[in-house]
Length: 272
Image 1: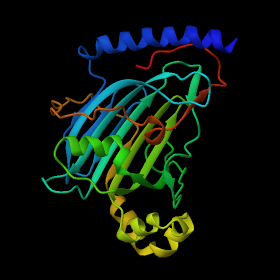
Image 2: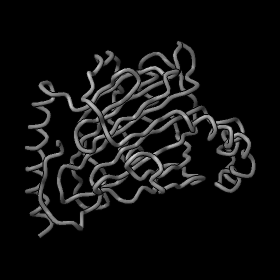
Image 3: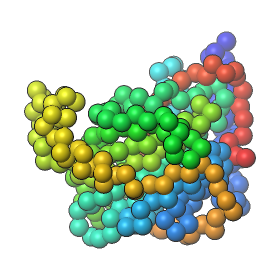
Image 4: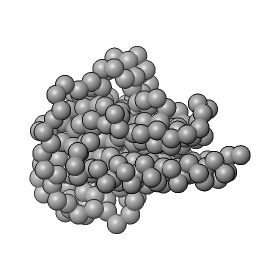
């Protein structure tokens, strides 16, 4: 029964996608005001970004979301990107993502980030940030194949070989995921450990680079203010014109993996 339903739900998802996309120009559902990213559709969220980081770009697209099943769902990927101001190599960067799976047959797997280098220094589900429960991970990102890094390079900036990132994420109603990630170039001791197959384990990096990791965590603590509730609808600023990467985002590494939902089958509208 699953394959037939998946085929039918895929058609219904495309209809939802077409309806939402056709209405975007009439009523924007996401955007930037000042240095704050807003998503006013479900899930509603506002993410204030450190004003010393400047907006690179913001946008939205539809993409196939990876899964471990024979089929994969289509989802919405809304993003914003920020970086330090200047023309030289990027020393600080950040991005936000809101991902939706509009077909109720699908939901997100747990936020384990199997394809990212996960040092798991922090894992906070206390609900201390606004109305959502956020998990926190420290990740090492290979900038060569990373979509946000390619965006920076396409617009004249130089990126490091590896990023050290702190990733906040929350999953709302199983089918909506919000991600906020701050990055700095990985410290030399981390790059050296990655070049040494014997020294690239989590334990060895923690042992060799504890001082650098602690400093990075300190730097990251005040980059974002994550809020689940919105006040008045924002007045979005015009999105800057930028050159986009010539490949699609790596959804698996940036957002995670989809799986069949245990909640039932059908579709629902991703807007309010």
